[in-house]
Image (cartoon, helix red, strand yellow):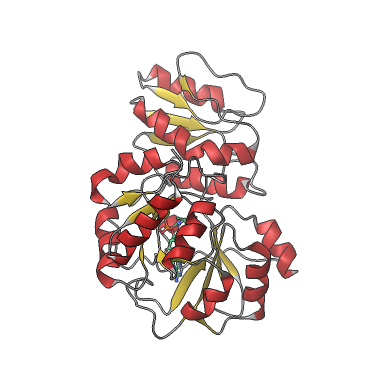
Length: 330
Ligand code: TXA
Ligand code: MG
């Protein structure tokens, strides 16, 4: 049931008292705490089992609030905020001196975003300050896209859950580093690289930092229990048959175009349209995981538009060494 205004008021009271509230955003559910409350911030790391040097995104009600958290905000950052906020874009900027290093994982930069979800925006407006929120799942697992997923993962360990139904985008925000002179993409996500580039009028490189700061940048992340294997159209059937012949329980996530699901495998139909695939990706991985499979085999979408983020999450769910080489997959 979608949460009411009364429940949003209750959530605000919980946050003000230093509690943890999970709430819907357009991307995935977040696990929120007051971004100014040290104890509440520490609890986020404990509950999620997340390394404390892993910085959190601070969610804001409005772009004007950026200045309370960040300094040296460039013209480009304002332009992106005007164009894409509220929306699935997280910007990394230089932090203000008064911002706690607990929220930034010890860094001098801060991640900010204005989510495009009515319950999230109402919560932020009534709360009246920044809410730090990582995805509301245990560290390393798939992100939640329904309130039920949050309950499954974090249940009684948090204080309140706001329900906004299924998330509209289904995949985390795009992270763009604007803290230096050269903007760089740190994580592909709900806002496409193409849209950012057209707004900036120049191409934006990908940058994986050497320091492991982005959990999105850990080798195996967003992962279900079963092993995830990526295969392409040419070797898809053969890959599945090989696993079946080893007596393994096999499930299929996304099929290559024009291929029918093979017999004797668990299959959750996901859309060939990549936007719809993004929405159902995490729910489908969770559902396949409930079936006690050894292996989940998936094809990759074309890596353009939101397909870039979907493919990124599938590669991370698979981890290194689990990718079967082929033209499209390598
Ligand atoms: O869509 C989303 O972004 C969701 C919703 C809830 O807003 N949040 C989310 O949070 O995905 P989380 O914590 O799961 O991922 C946030 C990412 C992490 O990879 C973190 O390392 C990165 O943002 N990050 C945060 N602050 C950073 C900084 N100062 N520099 C580089 N990366 C940063
Ligand atoms: Mg996460």
